[in-house]
Length: 291
Image (tube, rainbow, N blue to C red; front, side, top):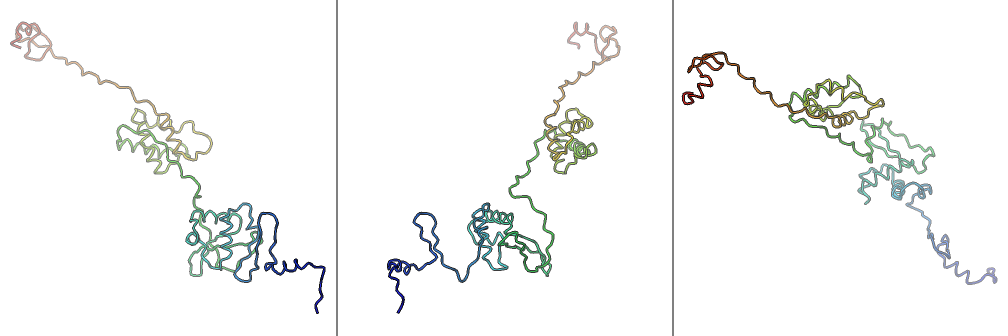
């Protein structure tokens, strides 16, 4: 016969019997309430340092959780993850960079025994704990990083003056002048594209009665002492800002007067200057019909 406890209220015993989830905590107020059932199969242990990370985005935390739940050799490249989830390649790539920054992922390029170079992704469930993966093929030197996606594109060069007539000879002279500027200052080394952009501006200067020496002095005089990071932009600015005015208009000189030799008039036989066989002015006035 079992021992009875008459002091224990029967109501409390029935409440305990009805509670099928002994880990459930009942709160009288609002807020979160956990309804937990212990996992026995198909589960992944995630640390609170990841689940409650103060700097990672929600997408990065969820992506790290998904990656840690995958079996070895699973595909976790951007294309495969974008095909699995709806966030798209751009957001997934940003989340992977977050996880790399905080040590939850490492990506290395390795060479397989067959000589093929592949990318290996290492998932770290506790960054900084010094864990090691099993032996893999020797890593190769990582490729040079590409331009960051958020870096703005390089600004185009400023426009330069254009000559009134694009003479091939004038443009070649301008090109030779620009290519020779590095002899005056090594910082003025120009690429072929930069030279082609600047050559019409130099031709516009040469078109205004300026010789190559004067143009070279205008482009290389009083250069800054600090490094010149983009010489083509500096030269384009000078070609535009310091463009001299066009030369003044000069009317062509009148042709010189004709100096006739002395001859005798056919009418009065008087000597005067004129074409041979012509008449003097008096004879032309008195007998205009005979002129």
